[in-house]
Image 1 (cartoon, rainbow, N blue to C red):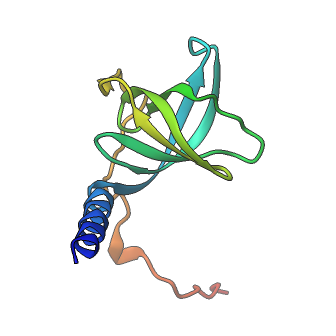
Image 2: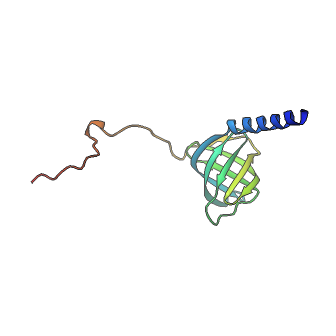
Image 3: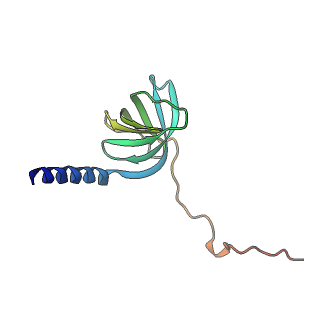
Length: 125
């Protein structure tokens, strides 16, 4: 009975851990060797303590690297915890630093919805 409760508690902790992660799909830059070498990666999920990162086909990332998420203007030092194919689980080993924004995300509808139509217009002759 105690063993089952311990397993359930472990499963609950694992579920809680997953709840804290926020799924995302953002471009990020992983760099190492004092930021002399960098590569684009995709940030798949993020939490307060780490992230899941997807690499391109032939990219190799060392165990310690710097991660910069341009759209959020944040940078953090990371350590690889696990590797599965092209995906990497990394934990943050420094405080997340706010960086100067490289670009900003603008969400502003500029299309006049009354003029938008999915119907093809016939040419007038």
